Structure formats: structure tokens, C-alpha cells
Length: 483
Image 1 (cartoon, rainbow, N blue to C red):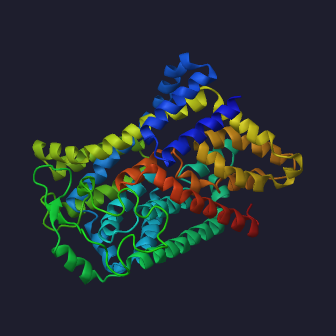
Image 2 (image 1 turned 30 degrees about the horizontal axis):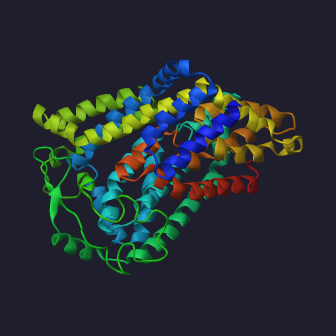
Image 3 (image 1 turned 180 degrees about the horizontal axis):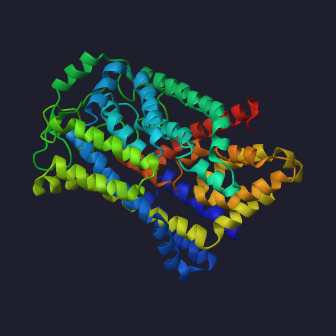
């Protein structure tokens, strides 16, 4: 019964948010609370929620201060050269911009933290997508898939969990997987090219001069959220030109024209642009900010301190040095309060969902059922089975639940048929491109929140492509004899 209710709860959540019948925060809170009552454990709901909040509190703290830190870095102009460089390289070509999104996300993912990757990628690419009226779900989908492939780095989390669960060396798991992961990353780039070509057909191609010329003719709006001293940035109000403008083509990708895609709204006026005269710029402190960011990322990779502590210290330093006057600091905090509240609220709402799943025993029963339904004849192919199961299981449960709860059981079953733990561990990494868009991953709320994309729209667009990327990695792993 718990197994059925567990799957029913997840299915209900996904259907309601994709049909936009409920907001993600409301669905994450109300649906598990309702199912907790169905299970007959409503009296323990408070304990389950507090356990979930306790587990996710460090993540929420990290996201809060990370958003403040990178928000300040955007304000002071640290990423302006990146945006300008990408714009010049892409030449306002939608195809190049989508491929550039995948490339940027993959490079930044080397720090091993998905939230950081999404904040930097969206900050750099969002103005380009808005100016050219490109589909924002294409940006979020491509970024999530590229980060998902790179999330298998030994310091990214899943590989370390698999190594710990099966008592293996992380390098023994990861290094042989590199060829298959490179094939997966190449597939993401090819897919980005295809999606970019579809956007190009829909919007046409402008030159950089065309974009800048049209921007001069449009109205200006305040940068940030209305804090004192903010500058101005031009925003395009017309279609991107070319083949008919936004929404005119018949082959627009899924999600094109969704909320936040087709027109500029008042809520979109808060994005940080490239106005070279905005009051928050700190050109004299550029190298200090670059060194501070490099040091912060290095400390994260080297694990000198817990990530929430690093971002807390980093945000305090960034605010104090760049904006020494308290009113200016308050203005910067107010400018980014909306993002902080949305993301942290989503994380604590997700704590209700995960708390009920784990506290009621649903997740354990779901995992046991999945293992039990595997036919005995599949024993010699347990690595393949594990790779396939990693797609739904890492999407519907946390990495901790999968790697520490399910993988050891699967590995034991595989060992009885001569499948080595190393093969099982490598196969377990296959589902990460899909996992990064799971509603149980806090980083995905940073991605969709900063990009102003509905979570349901992102899910409808990305699931099929991410699943295909996972299968490509699995196929490459089997072809190379890695899995």
C-alpha cells in the first residue's frame, strides 16, 4: 500500500504542476500532507516536516547567501565581460547562443555545485535570450542537461555517494566512465545545436549591430528591483526580426511562448543588463571581485569549509567591500530579496515532500518494490538494469536515498551473478542528466526562478531530452565495455 501511495503522491504532484493547477510551493506542501493523512500517520506530520527541514536547512542557507553573493557580483559588473564576449561571439545567432549556453554551463559545472552553475549561466545568458525573444525553457533545459552530465565529477556528489555506499575508490568509478560521459556531453552539444537551429528558424538571425541599434530605439527600465542608485538598461519590445518574429514559426520548440518567453512583463524588469553606466558598477574593484570569486570556488572544490559557511562569508565580504555604506548594502539586499525568498521558500517546501516520503516509509517500499520486480533472468545484466532504473529512481528520490538505499541492494543482486560492484557503481551514474531536473533537487529551483520559467514548463520540455541523454551515456558505456 505504501508503494502505491508513494507513486500516486509523486504522480499527483507532477500532474498538478505541469497542468498549472497548483504552484510548486503549494503542491510540495499540501499534496504530501494529504497523503500523510491517507497513510494514517497524520499525527506524525510535524515530525516528518521538521526532519525534512533539518536535512535541507544547510542547502537553503547556502542558496540564500549564494544568490546574494552572485547577485552582487552581477551588480558590480564581474560577469559583464562574459556576457559581452558571448554576445560578440554568437553574433545574435540563436543557434550559437543555445550552444554557448551548453558550453558555459559545462565549464562552470567544473566547480561541482549545480546552484552556482545555474546562477552564473542564467546571469550571463538571460539578457541574450530576452533581447532576441528566445525560448527560456530552451536555456533552462540545455543548462540542466549539461550540468547533469558534469554532475558525475568525483567532487560533484553522486560518484562520491556511489563509492561510499559500495566501499570503492571514486577515481576507479569515474575515470573509466570518462569516454561515455564525453559522448553524453557531445550529445548535449548536438542537441543544443538542433534546438538552436529551430530557434533560428523561428526568429531569424540578426547581427550584433542590428541588436544594438534596435535597443537604442526602445524604452529604458530600471535595473534591479528598484533600489536607490540603480542605473538603466535597454530592453527590446519588438520581435527579434528575421523570419516573422517570435511565435511566428510552426516548428517552435516546446515551451516557446510560455510564461516569460514571448513578451517583456513588469516582472522581467529586474534582470541585470549590460548598461555600462549603471551606478552599481565597481570597475576599480574588478580584480578583487574576480579573485574573491576564484578563491570561493577553490575553497568549495577543496572543501576547506562547508559550502553554506563559504557563501555566508563571501556575501559579507562582497557587500562590505563593494558597498561600504549601509544604505547601499540594504539596497542590494532588497534588490535580490525576491530571488532569495522564492528559492529558499521552494527548498523548505520541498522539505515537506521529502520528509513525508522518507518518514512514512514510502521511499523504502518503493525502492524494495522496484528491486523485487526485476526478473531473476536479468541477474547477469544487473548493470544494464541499474542504469535504466537510475533514470526514474534518481528523479523520484534524492541521491542519498538512491545511492545509500537502493544501490547496495542492486549491487548485492548483481554480485550473485558475477557483476562487479564497479560496473554497478558506474551504471548508477547514468541517470544524473535527468536527476538535475527532479523536483527534489533544490538547484533546479534556482535555475527556473532566475530564468523566470514555470517549473512545469521546464519539466515538460526537458524530461524527454534528459532521458535520451541518459540512454546515450548508458549505450556508450556498454559499447565501450565500461558498464
